[in-house]
Length: 95
Image 1: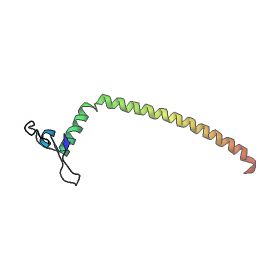
Image 2: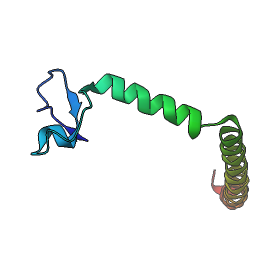
Image 3: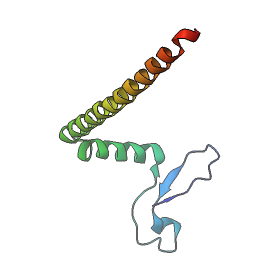
Image 4: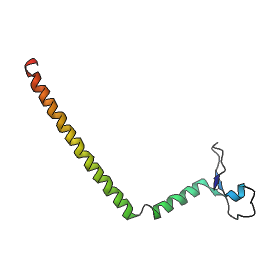
């Protein structure tokens, strides 16, 4: 399908390629509003792609990655605190 709008804020329809081309006899479908097409696509995605099982798996993996990144940050923080303590100890007489 092709987009028949020109981007000037007017109502945009999706037209069948057959209707926009030379083969107007080959297609009996009607024009669809973009909002309706978007709603159809989103509802199909919700039903077929974002199933409960898949969303649960994605959330578990995201939580696992977040925990792993937190441990790396904690290690870096420990190194920085150790360096800070060493610097403070070295500057003790001068402060």
